[in-house]
Structure formats: C-alpha cells, structure tokens
Image (cartoon, rainbow, N blue to C red; front, top):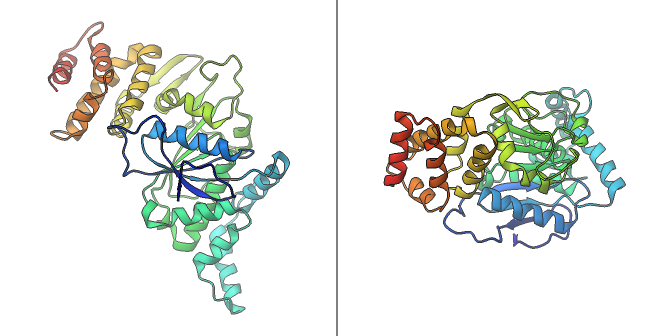
Length: 345
C-alpha cells in the first residue's frame, strides 16, 4: 500500500501517517480504517486521512470513495442506501441464503464470500472495504466513516456478516460522522457524531439520544456544517458530549466516571487527552476536577507499574493541567493524593 499518496482510482487503499512528527505518543502498531464521503477529491481524502492520523496518533488505512461529480455521487448514494438499507429493510440473511441456493442450482461455483463481494462490486470502494474487514491483519481496527462512507461501510459490514457469519463483524468498533445511514447490522459497537444542523444526518430517518451532537461548530457563526475536517476540529467536544446531557451550553448531567474510562482507553495519546481536558477546563470547569481525579485513579489501577504513565508525563502540559484542575477551589483528600502522585512520577 502507498504511503501518504493522493489516491488515483476508486476503492484504492493507502496508508497515511501524520505529517507533524510521529514521536513518542505515536503508536505505529495500531491501525484505524477511514472511508470518505461523496464529492471528495483525492486530495480531500488524503488530507482527511492525515488529519485522522494526527488525532488518533496511529497509521490510517484509507479507502478512497472516488467522486464522479455531485449528481453522479448522489445517484451512487441512493443505490448504496437501497442495497441493504432500504427504507423498510427486510430479512437480508434469508434473501442471501435463497440467492446462494439459486446460484448453486445453476452450477455457480463461487464461494459465499465471493458472491457477497460481487454484490458490492458496482461500488469499488465497498468491495475494498469488504476485503479490509475480512483481512485478519485489520480484524481489530476501528473504522471511521464520513457521510456516504457510512452507507458504504454498512453495506460492507452486512456483506461480511452474510459471507462469514455474524461473528465476522461482532464487536467491530465504528465511528460514524455525518451519517445518512438508516440501519446497521447487529453486533457492531458504533459511536455516532453529528452537528445538530448537519442536513445529511436527517436522511437517516432515525432519532437517537445516543448520538454525540454539537449545535454550532467552534469558530463558526452559523450551525450548518458537514465536512469531515470540521468534525475533526471539534473532536474534543464530541468526545465529551458522548458522556454529557445538555443543550444551549447548559449541562444537565455528565458521566464523569464514564468519561474518565474513555480517556484511559486513549492510552498514550497524550496530545488528544490534553486537548480534551483543556476543553473540559475551559467549558466545563465544574466537572473537570472530578473527571481528572477519576482519570488518574483509573490510570493508576489500569497501568500500575507500566510505561503508559511515564509516556504521558513526557507531554509538557498534560500533568500540569490535571494538577491545576484538581487543585483549584476546594481540594479533597483524594485529589491531594492524586496530585501528589502526579508530582512524584
């Protein structure tokens, strides 16, 4: 696979790395997969994948969903949406079994896997995504999809489950941005992010309280936004809002313990952890001390004696911000103990 190259053909797979230096916080052994939305140029795809690599601090395996112009892309979106995600989806598994049996009676020698892949072949990016999902090298790789990429990913996941059984996609982590997709196959773990007035998301025809939403993107006056780069720029707020209930800047409740668990799961990605805590400090100051305390406690429990804490300390601003968050105002005995630990590392 090529490295940080601009793709040239539909469905091309390439590996991308952040151009801002990989350094000690970069996990070269981890991989995430990315597929872009409609009307994206090859350069758009590359730039988005590199931005995702910077946020995730690991290599990104990009699947290029090529553009043929707005109207052609729109027609492909409609076909993608209809394939396994029609407005009233039926029993896809039974239909596939009947289809395979019919082909067998006609002496078709293709395997179930090849038949499933061929169903996707009209969209090369869907076929490429299918191959990646079933590649053992990427079995644990989370998948990030934007806009039409969600339709393509949903179809590829469904085809993989039809070909190899539900276990082939069970537990697959999916991060869905600006999605028009109405339905997803069962068994995956999906996180959805949407700007409140991202009109593309209205096409999903679903209402869910589990979607992490933002009203007006940071730095914008108008609430209308859809580009993947804008989603990336607002990543800290989306991350926090997965565990927050509220509207119009007012927080009704925040799951500090759950948010701390999510932060620990980021491992040694200190730049991202710092940005999230900075967002909490600036926008949710009454909650940041509780999150910081829970984060330090869980970090010590999960990585006692390990190298993760020492790696995180190498970030010049993370530990000072955690200490500042817990030291301001009334400081509990538990917070004092956590602060003493951070200073002793």
